[in-house]
Figure 1 (cartoon, one colour):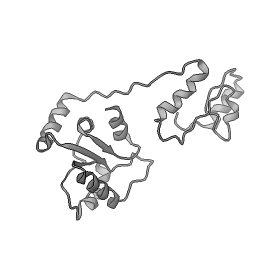
Figure 2: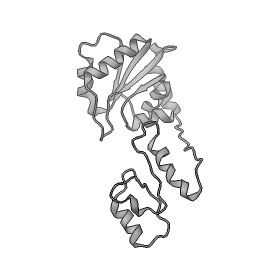
Figure 3: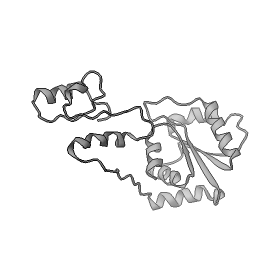
Figure 4: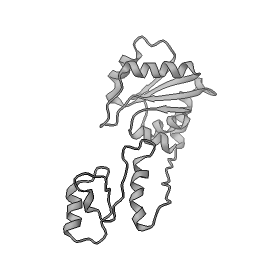
Length: 184
């Protein structure tokens, strides 16, 4: 679990489980893990999956690279190919303006500026997001001075994955589409 609760650690202690493996860096209850590992959750260079695989080290398992592979649906790929027919042979930069729930969105002016800078580097800009981002996209679109493709709330999940597979660059916060981009 991403944010372990102290009651689970205490339960393991009370159950007299001889080897309690967990994140020792947890201030209130890390001491309970007698076979614990110090996890630096502030390390932005590692995905949470990689961080939590550290917990396998007390078991003698320390060289696991998690497989992250996402297969793109062929029908969705074909639909996206049609949507992007005017962009064949061009470098695409996708800017996901959604937040995934727990994260804060950037200001529309920041998304505009990111798009402008990427466009000046030769990228065609594609904005993506869900129906919650329609209003934000309207604000982003106002007074924009570079070409872009608005795909906010226009794709199914399978089509979104197909579009992400076509991108040279993905910009976005910690969200489902960011994880899909990483896997692709």
